[in-house]
Length: 292
Ligand code: GUN
Image (tube, protein in one colour):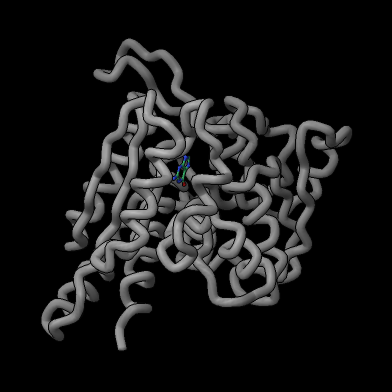
């Protein structure tokens, strides 16, 4: 078994972006600028947004972190987003999800200009991605593709089983892997909470993308010998040995599945860092698209 080391690969991608950003600066071109909106005090969201801002610093991007109260009205948030849409210095905008219940998530997503939609959640971005047009691929599925590509994982003609059908991961990765490109050309099965024979389907998989959000759901008896396993899960589990008081675990029972598979992403250090590298790549592209 080999690890698909997202920490290592994301660092390599960020190192490359850092050079490309410095080259832009030397050419007198604009520095990429990401604006991130964080609403409320959700601990996990704070951590993710903190990592995104830190990564901007690492690669030489400008970043603006906008912290808003949990009680902000939808109208005030829309106003803020419109300001960022109109700000020519801002290349990419992300609103960290989940949002407080009184704010309509889809309305917020649709308000971000597609040209600044570096999260790739806007219906225009998703529609373009589905149709094979140039688009921002949403960061987690894009990060998974970059990881498969780095390790030269053969995907053509393989059976990929995606567990989970969320707008953020399951559905987009299922479409991306079915495309006539690399990584892609998979035969894809999407499984979800109403799939009756999930174990039998997983046993036929050459590649499994576990993105259902259930702690250590995928067990060794559900995995074919030699399969490639991508674990998108991130669940906090109490752990008094950690300074934070919790450990991060995935949707895959790593210890038992890792003895059977050919490749596997660890949690943490697999898909998570790749998501951030993919976001940085999208922000760079959003900026470069304005060059003329
Ligand atoms: N919440 C969980 N994943 C994501 C993501 O990729 N982007 C944003 N904005 N929020 C998230």
